[in-house]
Length: 112
Length: 114
Image 1 (tube, each protein chain N blue to C red):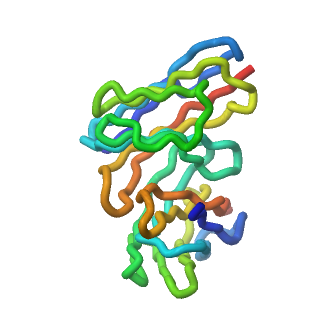
Image 2: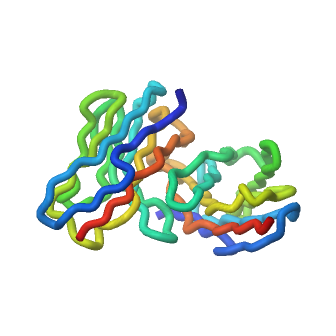
């Protein structure tokens, strides 16, 4: 299946620092999405980047996509304790059903 | 209204019980999804409904039975579950078809099978 692999699996930082998470995938994609999940809750969509885009910004979030390396990164700048959550990338394969498949996630802890 | 609601929030059931999970959205989305999520794992797709018709069943055991009575509602009927079915069950909705669409998730139902 087209499952992304997030790296690192866990990340612990201090408030104010930047957090970077990476996602790698195996086959060509239409787009890649990033979601956040607070403990035991539903997922919240953060940003979608299409296969022909290289970078997108949304507030403190910056997402890059390198289709030649089949990888994406999510940067959260000036992190806050409220950013503590799990972050998942989701991809849908070219020629596929357009149903996003989630990676294993990165658990981010931001210490106040 | 950009909310997906799920009821109940928590459910404890025995292996011989029959129960149902409910999901509702009023965003006009015509694609709805059920996911199962175990602790510290990503969501696993179970079912997809598109225009109230089941379009994807990810080889889910028949003890899970989905139903989409109308474009706003999605149910998951549970019968004769096993303890390993204990998990967070997430409902999501999106615009159907075309390139991958943003999914809106409900808060989930925490299911415990005893």
